[in-house]
Length: 335
Picture 1: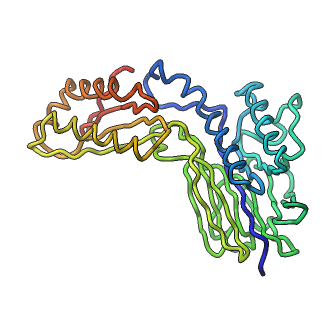
Picture 2: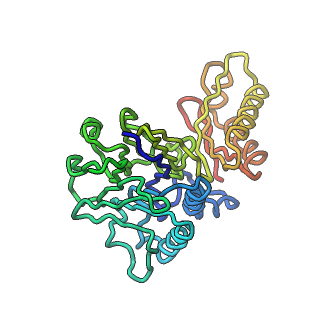
Picture 3: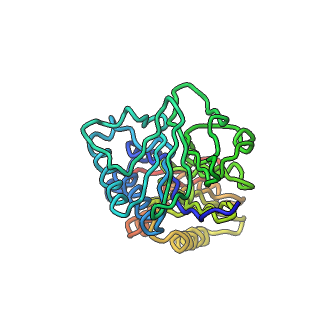
């Protein structure tokens, strides 16, 4: 059955209350970045919704823990939701572990375009454009201690595209058997697609990586469902700082100058591949030869780190070298 095309942004796990972690010491000139990055990335997500002229925004939980952010978090979100309201863009929010509906402070009023799914039942809203229904958005906020029950999420009876918003872990086969066009899932910090045909189930991941293990670009997902109900998902980066793990291979003939040249060459390549993002890079040197012995003794690794930090860690954007490994022993110096 042909339907009207639908275009929306899906995001989750913003965790406005959680700054990055994993460094022994944060360099003074990068402390504001660590404090603000979750908010800056979230603001970029809302900018994507506006720039893409999305029909709606779907939030799948763990947006913020209001008690930890204090007034700033709810006030920030209310302002961003208001930007969407001015353009007539609806927001559908399924709460997760840290943001059940009753955790929103009564002192901060949510704009009328924000629809919070309850925890005690499945609720359904209709996403429309110019008064024409486009999709049924159904969902529920996380029920503490209870698993997801996919059979409770029915498809729209009138043949509209169905989007289900829910937080938590669930088996792909249990979702695949339901007549839901797009499962907007939350609760994972890494982007993942459980399946993409004939329907789709997708975790967008967190918009901002928080620690060295969360490598590569993070952002939100632009979802497009065409008139034949085919689903296409596209990562739109929103992170302002990005973690990378890099391996540099050496052999017995590699000199310190060679190694430094390879490190610097990779730094330049990372800059080109990640425009506009401050980078935090953990280096691993692999291979064989006397240079690895020097790295294990400590002075060479510490010296290379200090040089890379001084020459590349203070730019805009910065490339900060977090650590240098010889394959078995990590070498770090204080920031």
